[in-house]
Image (cartoon, rainbow, N blue to C red; front, side, top):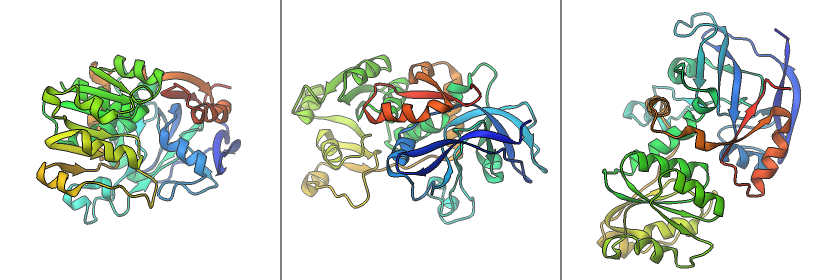
Length: 350
C-alpha cells in the first residue's frame, strides 16, 4: 500500500484542497478503513461556508464525516473487527462516564469525540469509536446506503423524541436532506406526513418519500393556515418538526400544532438568534416543546437496521456521484440550491 493518499483538507472558508497526505496507521484499539464512499452533508456544507465548526473541526484538518468502507488494518487489542470487514464507522462516540452518559443522554456527552476525514482514500477510526460506534454492514447493503446511517440516526432520534403514535399527522418543515429523512421515517412508521418545502425538486422528493400532502412555501404565503387546513376541523397537526433552522419557521411550527401536540425544534439556528413565542398559547394549549441534537450508539444501530430492512428507500437519497477531486464543484452546486439530496463521493476513483 502507498504511504500517501488523496484527501480533502479544510483550510478555511470555502477553501478545501485535495492534497497528498500520509496514509494513517492504526494505533492500539484503532482501525484503518479504506473509504468506499463518502456522502455530502448539510453540516459539511455549513463547515465549508464558514471554514470551521466549533465542536467538530478546526482547520487545517481532514474533512467529511459520513462514510462506509472496508477495514484494511486492525490495531492491537481490537477483537470485534478483521481485515476485509465492511463497516460503517460513525462520526462520534460518547465517553460513557460523564453526567449525561450515565443518564442515557449520550448525545449530550461532555466529552463527545468527533472524527473527520471521510473525504479521503483512507480514514483512521479512533479506539473509542471502534469500541462504541462502528457497525458491521450486512452483505446486501451497498456502501452508499450504509453511509446514510449517521444522518438517518439523527432523523430517527428526532422522530422518536417527538413522542409519535401510529396515525399521527406530522408536519415536517424543510425539504433538505434531514427534512426528507424525517418525512420518510415518519411515513414508514405509519404517520400522515405534511411536507412544508420550498423548491419544486423538494416537492417531488417529498412525494416519493411518503408525504401525503405538500405545502409549498413559494406558492402559499399563509403556511400555517395551509397546514392546519389539511387537518380535521383545522385543529392543527399532532407533531410539527422544524428541520430548517430559521427563527421564523420555529415560530410557524408552534402555530401549526394542535392543542396537546408536540413541536420539535430539530433544525439548529445560528448562535445568538431568538424567537418570539406566545406564552399564553403554549400554556393554555398544553403544547410540548422539544429539541433534538445528534444521535447515540443505540440509535445508530437502529438506523442501520432500518436501512438493511427493506422498507427504507435509501436509493432515493443518493442523487449524484462524483470523484474526490470534484468535491469543490459539488459544494458550489449545493450552495446554489442544487436539487441534489446527497452526492456520493468516490475517493478510490481517479
